[in-house]
Amino acid sequence: MDGACPCGTGRGYADCCGRLHAGAPAADAEALMRSRYSAYVREDAVYLLRSWHPSTRPPPIAFDEGGRPTWLGLTVLRHDPHGDSAAVEFIARYRIGGGSAVRMREHSRFVREDGHWFYVGAIDA
Image (spheres, rainbow, N blue to C red):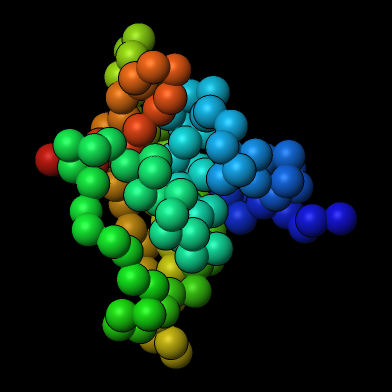
């Protein structure tokens, strides 16, 4: 048994985000966004970079810099698909050390190229 997926679907990790982390394409932008949240929880920098669009991809991600967050949960507020582009609005909750819980709200943009969804970045409010 692999335990519940961190993304909050209620499914097991292997049947949910684990498939995407292993290379399966995401069905839609929301699935990709959930898999990216799970990758942050699991500190999977390789997947995060692979699922980031090359036009906005940052340099390598180092999880050992600064305080390590403890991820507390994910709530998807909205998924707006439009053909090969989509927007997903979500709230991710985390805590660093013994600090207060933080709610990070983001409205993100995604594109699909050659059958694969990619995270592009946050949409300016």
